[in-house]
Image 1 (cartoon, rainbow, N blue to C red):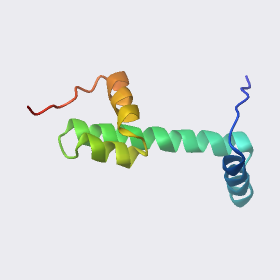
Image 2: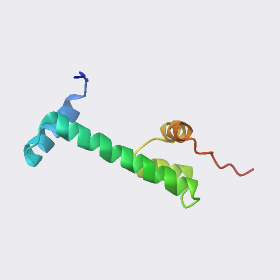
Image 3: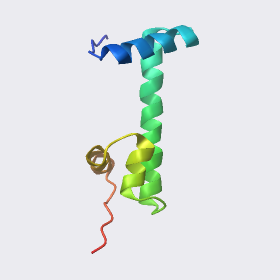
Image 4: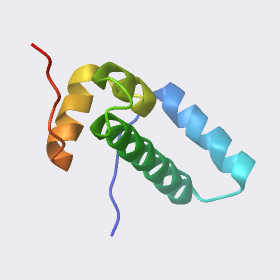
Length: 84
């Protein structure tokens, strides 16, 4: 199965450079990046859940903005910690 995606020109250039450097197909490069991103989000979520980092720090570690990280936490069933 194939999926077509649209990316910015700058992103396409970076993907092409990775493709040439790694001598891999474009789909292999993209799949590797997605898996790497998933691992980063999972690790940031774990650190937050353990209370080792703040939500802001978890978002930064995952490369997300705060609202994106909140959505990821909700998807993973991680309860947000709020101090009043």
